[in-house]
Image (cartoon, rainbow, N blue to C red; front, side, top):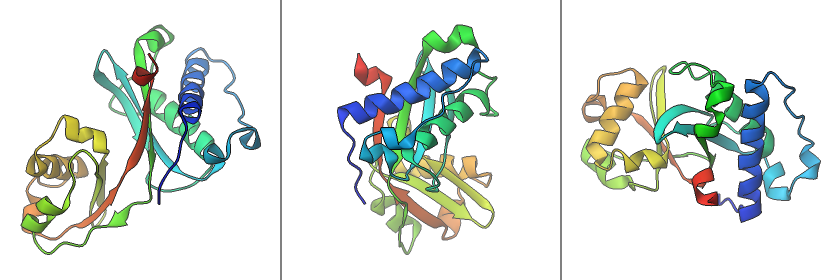
Length: 193
């Protein structure tokens, strides 16, 4: 499944995310989105992640792998969650808003990656392109493709993802995990300048 988003579509998604965060931080009413007023690609049901950075450091990131609602609404919901409900960070304050950079990732549907051994898994992944979901029973975690920029080594990437999942970092070497991959269309406020 491919995703087509124009430059204008990307700018619209970033505007929706920023406006929602600004309004919530100031205790103002969050805009109700009239889905039918947006371009067709933005009305389609899609899964998204919204990542916030402040001076290059992570400030919040929330998303979903499940397709639940039209993209414009999904981005608005994820932006609010990243800014105000990421348990790793305090809620964004009105004073911080000017320092925050927003990035939206629109996901393709995750597909199961069939592999036979840890060596196969290492060779099957495409660093820089694949978002990866690891699952083992009730444990589940994902890294967006952008994480490869900070963790370019496949083995380190998988170990950190296991750690994020709440299991020992080498579990991916010891047993076959459920692995899914996906791609993203990324749009960032950094690209607008």
